Length: 345
Image (cartoon, rainbow, N blue to C red):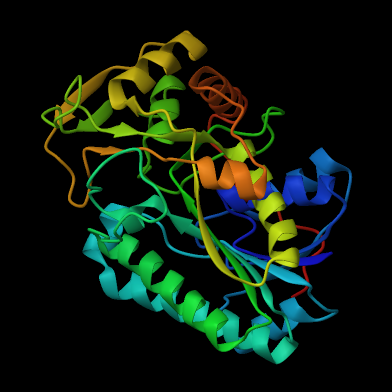
């Protein structure tokens, strides 16, 4: 199939492009590179031995979208969004404009191009503080921060869009906590500025880029007082997107799926696992809770296991080992001085 991947130069997008190319799909990526690097796409091609088409642009720009859809598209995988919980609390208008505005523009372009299949990068943040864990897809949706609310509104937009167009198929993938990297060490998570997520922060401490880890809260109602999350290897997540594309091709309508392992680890447990994988100490300090965070969030992935025929295969040790392999080989992440050699624009 001819697939358009929005935000495909980002962390999850680039790993998904590997899975898609290896499955034989033709891939076009559109990304404005606001929090990603074109070098990731160069390395995706190196890993797979296949080329992809890259449009540097913003999905809110009609001309950029028209360029991306040129040549035909069979389905869209939509990653493009701002994603930091803390920053969304500081800049809610920017998050609503970028995430929701971009999704509306994308679906309008899909209608104009006659594209009726969409895989959407959602988030477990749509559940907010769950009533019970592990969380099922039919749990109440109650996002507790602006980022989560944008994802929830985007889901609702897609559901309403599908309801108005019987031929449309959409798969909403609610990720829990993606971590790790491609086993080659060529691509991985490279946040700009201070990391908002735990694993890249831990990795940067281990490699010497940061002095110590700040743990936000040790007074949660969890076994060791630190937040518990369901961590998912990014290559398992990439494989789920490939499965979702196939599922959308055969199942009209809109369905949501949790993507996780069903097993939660606390912040301190992840730190210990990373110390074992890297052989490096991870000094840390305890800080106050962060706005919008919840105590525990783990997935019930049975629906994805059954319908998408997808199961997470990597454990926390493999996640940490691959994250360290990436960070140790790329201590400063992607350099910013290399250009991508097959720009569409």
